[in-house]
Length: 258
Image (cartoon, rainbow, N blue to C red; front, side, top):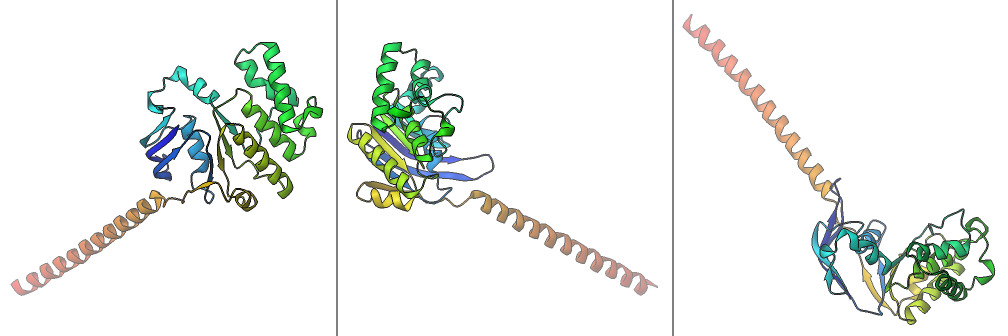
């Protein structure tokens, strides 16, 4: 379903976020992606929705290389890959119902279909009684459940949960994890990026991929700069020494000729 083939991603500041990644994700998988901060978990998500382009390698979604997607096809790709963010990204002046319904309105769904879909999602996340409340009136766990429902609104094939429990207490973290597991059991492929120990314990029997933080190429470049500077200083010192020796020889030669 999703294949990363020798994928690397570097940025203009010479930092490498992902290096030579090979990864295959099958339909219906629950894949836990873990690793330290800066190991590339968020970069992986942005590569998958084509917000970033790989520096090398290829990513395939549903047997089609992302490099073959036209610009006009990217919105449809992103409708098939729902993203759950650590900081929820809910719209503050929209209530819970409106936040969940927004992707459906963008897709020009009929009012009756929106009504039915949002009702089902509110029941799934257990917040039907808070449909008219605004994000500021919700707890962190409730806001994240609304974020999950919004990600599910367009019935995506994949959910990428990017550190979804990072701002939550342990009890809320477990609840969010169980909700995402339930969504996976209903047939949605789930990529769960986290380094939350509570979540990792809850998902310890699932397929886990460990990302390592690549060594920054900037370190190598700085080292090279230092080496070149040292060589330059050594060369300048040698030139000065040579000049002094030449002057001394010339002075001696003048004295001898006299």
